[in-house]
Length: 205
Figure 1 (cartoon, rainbow, N blue to C red):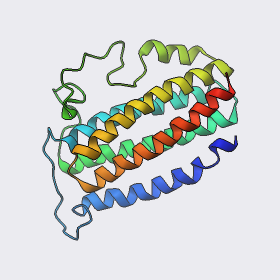
Figure 2 (cartoon, rainbow, N blue to C red; figure 1 turned 60 degrees about the vertical axis):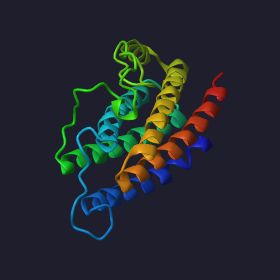
Figure 3 (tube, one colour; figure 1 turned 90 degrees about the vertical axis):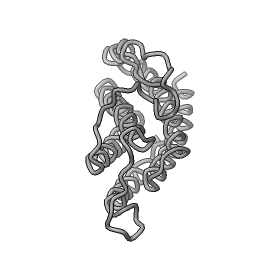
Figure 4 (cartoon, helix red, strand yellow; figure 1 turned 135 degrees about the horizontal axis):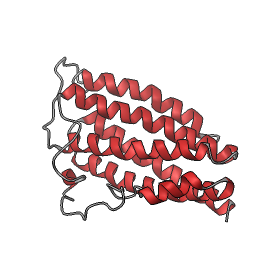
């Protein structure tokens, strides 16, 4: 329980910062200009917003599944924090696409904006690196107690690693400053949660 105690304040900080980030983008990236900087439809900024929104949606789904499959407060608290944080960030990403007047889907394969257009197509619903397959999600829905906890922690660890890789790509390639900063925050927070989940898995070995 004590490992997850720090997460709730962190989530609150992310939610507050999220509102500031959204307003900053709407105000021309916080530079004092009222003009909105609009990236291209195939830019890294747009690609990251689209792909991470999809990636985040699965994390939210997995987190709500496990909250119904275990009574363990540590896992339920972590799952709740991940769901709330990533749902909020997903809303910001989709909101930026609306603000920029850009489509929420692309004809190009996922991660093309990272130079990964030749990546093999995802199998069994796993559209991007780190995402769980439909089979794994079904297994999580059927698991209970410790088995559900372990499976969730394993799947979310892989999911976070894929998310970190994508967010690092935005830090390197995105042009909108606040989006880069959001991505950098994702890298830091998800790496911390990976370490946290490693300890939780060890406790359940």
